[in-house]
Amino acid sequence: MYFSTNRNALIPALAALIIICSSCAAEPESSPSDETPLTEFLSSAFGADLSPEEQGKKFAEDERQREDLVAQCMSEKGFEYIPNLQDASVAVGSADLEWDPESREWVAQYGYGIINYPGRDMPTGEEGEYVDANANYVASLSASEQQAFNEALNGPAIDPEEMPVDADAMEWDWTTAGCYGWAENERGTTDPLASDEHKPLMDAINELHENTMSSPELAEVDAAWSSCMMDAGQPGFSTQMDAQNSIVEESDALYEETGETEPDEAAMKELGDKETELALVDLDCREKTGYQEKLLDVQYEQEQQFVDDHKAELEAFRADLEQGS
Image (cartoon, rainbow, N blue to C red; front, side):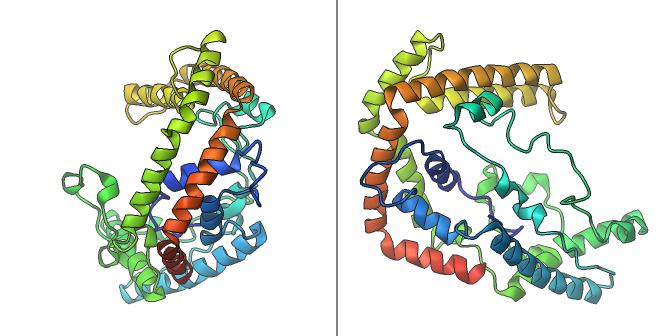
């Protein structure tokens, strides 16, 4: 799905909930659909129920409106600016990439999808390639003019010393975001994910995900899964998420060792091979213990209660998303 460029990244809990559902290997018989109560609501709210073609049309129209306003603003500031309209496939093409961590074939190729993932090695070609329509004009400017252009377009750069410790705590202010900010304000778009009005709901969704993964109902299947992993030569993991997180931590360590540069290719390949081996054993143990089915049972029950308890807040959130999209 497409998100406006100034919209905060989807909070981890929302992404995790949708990922859990999208990887469903089996569905409780009581479920009327392929989605759990909350993921079904969120998918609809964020437009995931639209076809790729419909998403592409929506993206194109949003970009056209935004870029026309940006061009107007930049002209008023004394700069040339060509509306930077991209092929919709740039934004929605990734929707065609399969993400199926319950498939043995997929796991054998990508593991958890951390080091290797669908599209990682996709060659960049003319179709779908991002082309900055203003690159030649910007290149013709002097260094000081380029800085002025960028500040007019995006707003002044943030002083690193003024950055909050928690970057997620930063609030987007259209008045400091240059012509892009002005254009978004003119379009009347809002950011429900970052608004104070919906913060209690976002916090509650975060808490729901944490409660689901640490639910007492999962303790027994976690123990069985952990025992299976140990028997298969992969000890030290108490919960299924511990296995995935171990690869994330090792990947982070490789990047920390090299600073801003890419980690050693051989080291990354070795970690990727380790990830695949671990993920395949993990998949075996999930299948042997019925882990996914139990997780879905717990998720369905807790999400249905959550939707019932927060129906008014969820509907208000969806309404704001539709108005601001």
